[in-house]
Length: 261
Image (tube, rainbow, N blue to C red; front, side, top):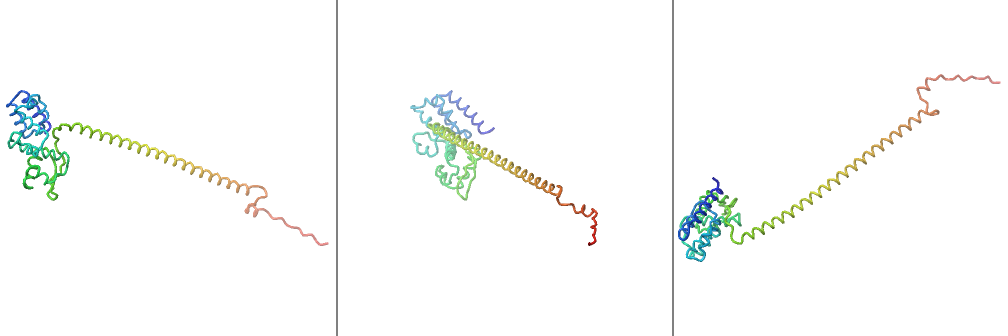
């Protein structure tokens, strides 16, 4: 079963549980959901009306905790620990995994020093074990550990729940991308049109050149014919140059001598 399908089944399971519980029992459902090792999306659970009713009540801390797992990081928890329920070890692990996903949203090269600070890890060995065993093996991220450069190169990271106000920013980003794509398409079409025009001009130039070459050939051929006919007329007309062989075969006349008076 792939991660997406497993996520969908878990979300459906916890949404149904949350819809049928209230009060402290609903708080337990939230703790169970945020502790589950295979669940990393919480917006659908957060949207359950029963959970929204926690707002402003003594159980609001469970609502705040669910919001933390939907959008926050380990640093956010440390900064607000006094207003949130104490996390169990599975929740601590889950929140640190989610922290890696948040960092990977904006940077594909994560320095070890930054990761150790954000995750409260004291040494590189512990950090690399966490990234390999708790992040890459679970399938939420893929990447390469670069010990020489002391960084984690992210190749893939699962997406987190959309934060409040993030939708507008995402729409604007997509709108800007669409505008850029449209402009690029127009530019490509103009270049194609220019290339077609140049191709047609080249074809016309080649055709004109071929026609001129043919005309030159015909002109030269005609001139050669005229010169040839001129020579034939000279040698064939009366009074023209006599054929040498014909002259040799003709009998010579004897010239008579007259006696002198």
